[in-house]
Each structure stands twice: as structure tokens, then as C-alpha cells.
Length: 222
Image (cartoon, rainbow, N blue to C red; front, side, top):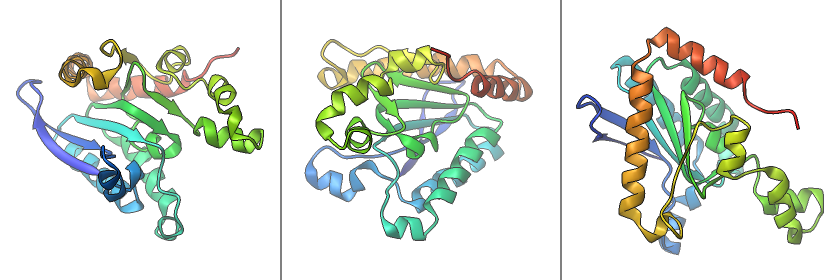
């Protein structure tokens, strides 16, 4: 779990940023545990959220994880409690909190950083309670059914916007974000600036009410 600060250009504020680093090469992925945070990573993010709240700084969360690390050592150290505390912090802070799913968002491990005022997604990102392969192995006992599982999970940005789970879709360059990283970064920055400005125009009580209504409006009867 990476935390840091950078100047985004919102009233010249230096914003705290919390994110999940995956790595690109196999070696980097192993170092970063394939983007699966441990309990201490979530506790670190929780501390940063409350610290940002104390100093009245907006928060940005970059989400790219298949889920929280499921190893026995993580469970022994309170993985479930750490995730719950992080979600509670997202809901409790009074400063604007904007999350961006930049690759994949898996289960509670992603929700721990994506339960704030607004959740944005890159156009071709996915966000789901479980991976299609995991769902297929549970429901059909056959991971070859992953495409069918993916269809039923409704894990795309368009699906999630329709169900009020996310708030905005950030368009990617032709061929995906990896084809033009600079253009993607510019699109993410523009979306963040726009969303933060909208949230900062509201009072803390108005943001709290809007956040509450957002949660109550999640879902849709098919």
C-alpha cells in the first residue's frame, strides 16, 4: 500500500494520495504481493485518511487490486477488521474523498479504498465482488465458465455506472490506457479536478448527506 503527496492544482492544495501498487514485471509484482494489501497496509491508509481529515486536505485513492491478501498470516493479524476500519474511515472523514479504479477492483479489498464521496473508473477497468474465474469455480466447478460468470457479474464500468456503484467513467485512449499513458494521466487528472471542485463547493454536512444518499441509491431492480 503506497501513500504519498502531490500537487494536483486544486487551489494549490497538496493532496494526500493512497494507492495500491502492483508492479509491471514478475519481480515487481512479487515485491508488491501482486497488489494484494496486508492488514498493515489498510491500517496505514486509515491513519492517512484521518490525518488528512484533521488538516482539511482532500483525499485521492488509486485502486488496482485483485483483493486483499487472503493468507493465513493476514487473517491472524486481523485482515477483516482492518478492511472494515478502512471502509469506516472512508465514510467518516468530512473532507472530499475521490477513488479511481485504474485497473481492477476486487471485493472488500477494493471497497476499503472506494467507499468515499465519489468513485471513478477507467473505461476498461473492472470492479467486482469476485473474479470471473473464482466465480466460475464456485458456481460451476469449472473455470472455463469464466466468460459466462463475467457477463453475470456485471463488472464493467458501464454496468457499474448503471447500478449507481460508480459515479463517472474516464475515457481511455484507443486500444486502452497502456497505449498512451500520458493521455490517460491527463484524463484522470481532469476528471479528478472536476470531481474535487464539485465536492469542495459543498459544505461538510452537504457532502455527508450526499454520501449517505449515494450508498442508499446503490443497486437497481432488473
